[in-house]
Length: 254
Image (cartoon, rainbow, N blue to C red):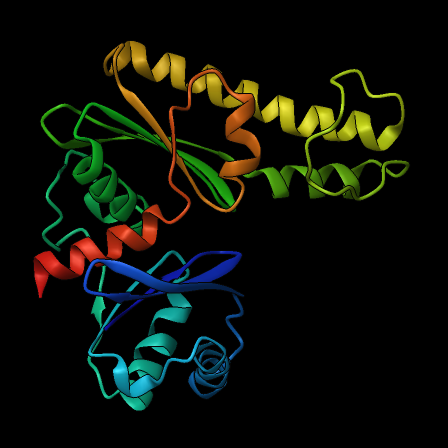
């Protein structure tokens, strides 16, 4: 079995694959202060609840946008799984060609998402990832990763609104009943959810003018299922796209 680990700024997402089948997946909070032993204890509990054991893992692949946590996860893999993990960089074989001005600057998660989406759908593609930041990636018909756009994530924006406006409360990120909110919470939810839907549509439509009018738009990330239905442009929702991309890269490079 393969253990895929995607280290994001907010969550560490884990997936266990039996060949191409995603057996189980989890999210745990990202904490750069946690030791390899502490992460291993957390993972062991998750494995236990799913009826899995560390000894069943025969491969580990890691992608991260939090550099301080990479050596932590590498050590955890070596110590508890007895496996030298594969680490995602721009130098791995991906099935796509990176045309970014400086390929080293491309986030590992963006490479993984682009590789997975191109494998699933072909090109041209626009991938929208609703994470700590909301990222937009463009892939050509020929499988060339061109780059994209990065916007503040939904949670970051909602938290900034709460912190910087003294009379506004912290609100749950959920779809409001109406766009015209009749109370403060409803008004904030409408602005956040429908505002982000408009942001997504606006950026995607501009990207299509530069990339291709028929580009397929794929969404992923923790909040994709909340925001995507309110957009005009998103055609596919793949919540586990990053994990699927990690499995794909492992298979290509092992």
